[in-house]
Length: 112
Length: 115
Image 1 (cartoon, helix red, strand yellow):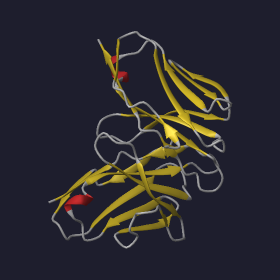
Image 2 (cartoon, one colour):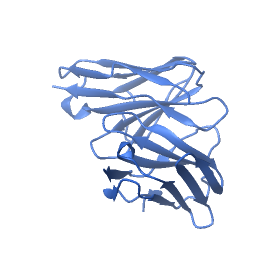
Image 3 (cartoon, chains in turn orange, yellow):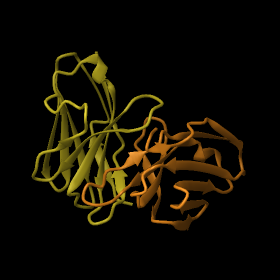
Image 4 (tube, one colour):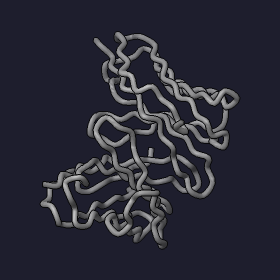
C-alpha cells in the first residue's frame, strides 16, 4: 500500500463546475499538506499549503484536511479551461528533512 | 511565492557524456534543496536531499556516484548526471524549502534526452 493514494483520473468537467480532488494517506505523522498544480512539461506550482486539520481558502480554491480520517481535499469553484492540469497532493511529517510524499496526481480537464 | 530557477531547461547529449543541471533559489536562501525525476504520466520521485555544506542524502536505489549533487551555497545546488545513458532520459526537477517553513517551491524542470 502506498503512503499516499490519489486517483489518477482523468477527470473531465464542464467549465464552471465545482471540482473535487482527494487524497488519502496512511501515515498519521503527516502534519503538512500541500496541493500542487503541474502543467505539462513544467515544474509543480504550489497552490495551497495547510498545517494540521482544517480548511483554507484562497480565491476559487479551498483545501480541507481531516486528519482523523486521513483524508485531504482540494475544491475548485467556477472551474476554467486554464485549470486543466495535473494536481498533485503532497504531505510531510515536518522536522528537519522536509521530505515530501506525493500522490500520483490527478489529471483534470475543464472543457469550455 | 518564492522563485526557483533551473538551467538548462532542456539538454540533449550523447551517451557516455556528463550533464550538469543548476538549481537556484532566486529570492531566498535555501538550506535544503531536493532533486526529483519524473517520467511521463508519473508522479515525482525523490532522488536526493541536498543540504548546504554537507553531503547529499540519496534515496534508496539512486546511485550516488552517477548522480553527483553539490550544494555549494545557500542559493545554488547542482546535479551532475555522469556517463549518461538513454535510460537516464527524464524530466529532472529541483525544489527548495523556504527557510523555517515547510513550504517547498519547485523549479521549472530540465528535460534531459540522452541519445
